[in-house]
Structure formats: structure tokens, C-alpha cells
Length: 133
Image (cartoon, rainbow, N blue to C red; front, side, top):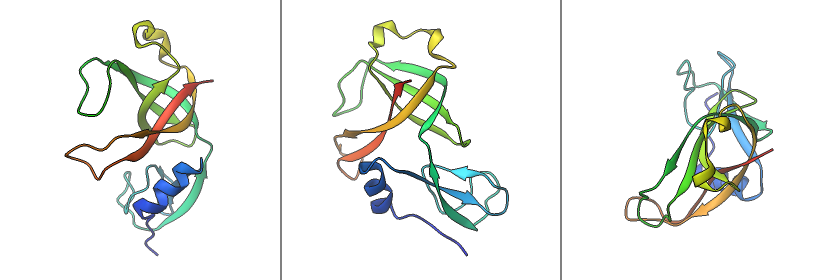
């Protein structure tokens, strides 16, 4: 049976501090944020699974010229969650001027931050944000 999590349910779970992905019955991959088909095998047999929200920084960048509605500088990280999927989000609690290569491999915990909408988005939204453990 194909399964998807509506955007509103995804946002509600984020707001409540729950991270819900979709696990593929065909290959076992976990997809987060949830989408209608598996990113790995394009399978459509998916079921909800809870994520612990912890992972490891694999790469990062410091944003010094920000899009509309954002105040630079800030750090964006790509995190490999313990369950497997990669997630991109802000890194909070560290001065961007102190961000160095030693960030790669550090453990983080996922939370959320609210971002303002702009002319290209659907309005305000919660997005993943990370803090060093």
C-alpha cells in the first residue's frame, strides 16, 4: 500500500518535536523528510517510522549572503541521521566565524526553527535545525 505523510502532518510533528520518516518495505531505506516514493529504489510501499533526531555532520557551509527574510551569517549543515537519511538544516549555538573543519564528524541533535516565508515559498514554516551534542 502506498503511503504518504501530508505536509501539514509533517509540520505538526516537527512542531511537537517528533521526527517521522517513511521506511520503504522494498529496500528498507528511511526517507526524511517524507515523500511519496523511496529515494533509493522508487518503491511506493512505505510505512511511518520514528527517528531519534540524532546524527553526524558530514559537511557544512557558512551563509554570508542570505535569501530574503534571513539574516546572515549562519551555518548550514548536512547531517547523516543515525537511521540513515541525510538532512540539511541550520546549526545553532555556534558563531559562524568560529566554524571550522573540526565540525565534520561531530554529533548533533535535531530540533526545529521557524523561518519566514518569502515570495517563493508557501509562507512561514518549521525547518530542521541542529545543535551540537
